[in-house]
Length: 239
Image 1: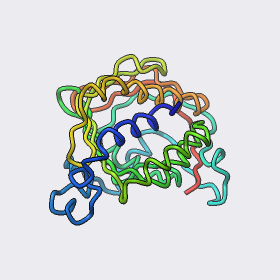
Image 2 (image 1 turned 135 degrees about the vertical axis):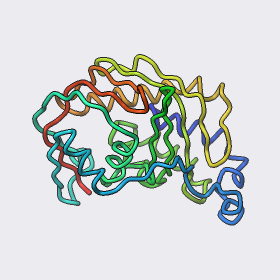
Image 3 (image 1 turned 120 degrees about the horizontal axis):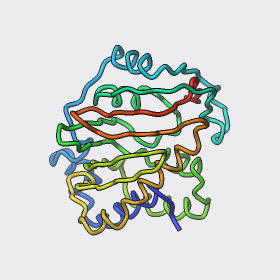
């Protein structure tokens, strides 16, 4: 069966594929309806934000050759303990400026709210998502099925997610998605609730793929992400 976030995204897309124009999949109509770009959360950043984020994390970033094989395209060395807080600008800068060549999400904005909720908006790169899926262990057969499904969508889909989460010792101990949109369409709550666990499983799989990484405690409070744990000292990625 399809795995983790990859499966969640596909379930959501299949559920709403018949309403393509409203979702942002018919270019002319989508532009008029404002569905051809990710939802604007009002989060902007500068290169100074990215440099400050890098310094706060204490990670040395290095670039691998562009020709590096997929499964070796992200490498990590060493570790150090970290106990800090991140703002919406910090994380938005980090993900947009850390240009791993197989990242399937583009134009990302992350917003931490005073009530403890987190909002994320982004575009899904329909080609890179297949490489990403392969990198986390999705079978070639499942990828082929997904490629056939996504071929029905002529342009890049945009997503918006809002919810709460908490992580303890590399386990997602709490996850509740209160809203998921594709384009301008709100995905029915029953579809979201029955599939959101794949997102938590994906996070846990990613944690295991990074040597020495341990998210001892991660939660959102006071419009910030509070992180306590261990992270790599060096990150090497192919861009």
